[in-house]
Length: 323
Length: 299
Image (tube, rainbow over all chains, first blue to last red):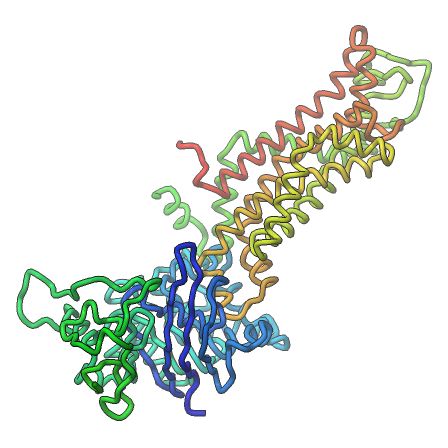
């Protein structure tokens, strides 16, 4: 199995009082074995929906209209709740955005980390504790024997995120989903957490990582492959090197020019992409990016573009590439 | 907060985080005179009920017609009632009944409210609506009227009172648990646990319950006087414990007929009720202040 996770033509709608939100449309992406895949996009582009679907945790008003989510060859969308639960935390783990809220405040780290090993019935309590301490040491918590009895609020944000990573990796899952794991942290901590993830990924943990972010710099530093999402569609995907050197979709190009880290000249006005993200209830006809696209031409307004190859393993949905 | 900081520094280094936390809570409790007073009152009531058989030489139902309605004396510290029974003995033994009813009713309704409330808050929408409807229906009955109806149907007994109190107090707990569960449910750590594979029982038992049990225990402590008063009230009306079993309510009822000439009977039935109410209320408030610093009065 060369792909740990492979999502094919996934389409998801949400029924809301204001109408049907077409949150994901025809989304396909792959997370290869032992690779880090970055998923990048603005707020509301469907990143979170994608993650929930991959974990089988879609909100109750969400409906899968089509497609499949294959994890190690089995379709998560067709699994029973019991099967799903045995995969979550064991084969797929997740690290959340805000470490201030993602740990239960009333349980000590020891309780949290021993409880999470409940599936290992044969493991004795002190073995579970030893394993938890070992994990804390690996994520760089100093003095883990003492610190394990502390409560989450006694740790700083960066330390909490390390604990969350330790909890996610304690079962050595084959897929780790990191949902903007550094957005809530300041820049120095961000760098530390990124290095930690890279280091863990490079050493004994066999996990593939799906790394969700809106920070292009992080994606460039972390990932092997990039998936760019816009308004519920994957508009471009490819290897990091290729995509950053040859951005082929006007949206990816615009994103890259807007990244403050890439601006060379001193300026008082940061570049932006004019216009707004389209309303997902009432989508524009044709290409979703057409209303904001500087290069839009006649065919864009008619039918949605199909993915067109830019290079091997690099494709973009744009008529400029395949008219 | 500098005070907390110095406390943390002053604590012996051998303590773990949890122990230090506990020590700090104990220190805060001891710094609250009303709370300590409440604790002493509660201790007084509980110990006097437990050691009733040691504290008094009389039997609670022993009739001695020679000393009917005797005034307080060295033999009978609080006098005797119309059948010559020692009133102090009956009050002490009555405490057993009161606390037994309180303990049974509160623990059962707390457990019931916890389970039903968490199910309503976490479970499917239809279950929530159904349970809320039932809770509201039960809560709309006045407790005493409900008790009168049930007693008329099945006859008066201690078990009947307990059943009535449990049924009527479950909705109160359940509603609070439900609200807390609803607000916890959307917390990221619950989602995180679900993402790491926890099922409903695990989410509720390991992650939701510890977050709500603290405030709930405080509520339970403040509910003790309410339950004791309901039991006394029903026994006063003759719907509760059967004579000759002593209850504070039936002592009040016995004394009520002779209130002009022998007021000590009514006083003897009333004072323990006041002590219990004050004790548990003060204790509950002090506990609330410790565990929920947000509600603490500005000092």
